[in-house]
Amino acid sequence: MKALRILAAPLAALALTVSATAIAHEGPSEKITVLQDEALKNVPGKKAMMIEVDYKPGQSSIAHKHEGTAMAYVLSGAVISQVKGEKAITYKAGQYWYEPAGSEHLVSKNASATKPAKLLVFMVLSPDEKVLIPLEN
View 1 (cartoon, one colour):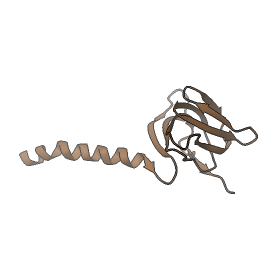
View 2 (cartoon, one colour; view 1 turned 180 degrees about the vertical axis):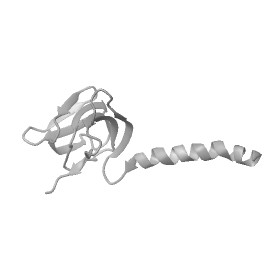
View 3 (cartoon, one colour; view 1 turned 120 degrees about the vertical axis):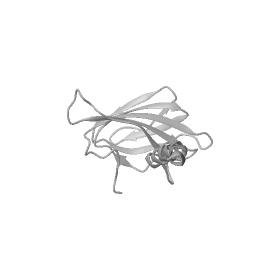
View 4 (cartoon, one colour; view 1 turned 30 degrees about the vertical axis):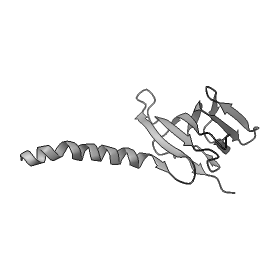
């Protein structure tokens, strides 16, 4: 029994590490980390998400749309963003933008080939809605 207690803390720490790693993924494009995912008690049927998006130098996201409403804030670096029907805009650290639900996000990329960039994205969506849906060519 004492041996189980000694192992409990390290196993719990390992489980938390594995869970946090499973939420964040890094592929050929940006690294996305879900910081919060909470049901909105004052808006039944909706949830709020806070997401961090990290771009390495030169990285970009695939063209996509969000089923929910999104607001993005540039934490560091500079990001080029273009929503269908609008011009591409370069946002620098401290600047932000809004995307209505269903917007087609044609361009989202690091504006620099040498420095990383980081976004904080806040979304409101239904629990069954997807955060990101890739667009067909």
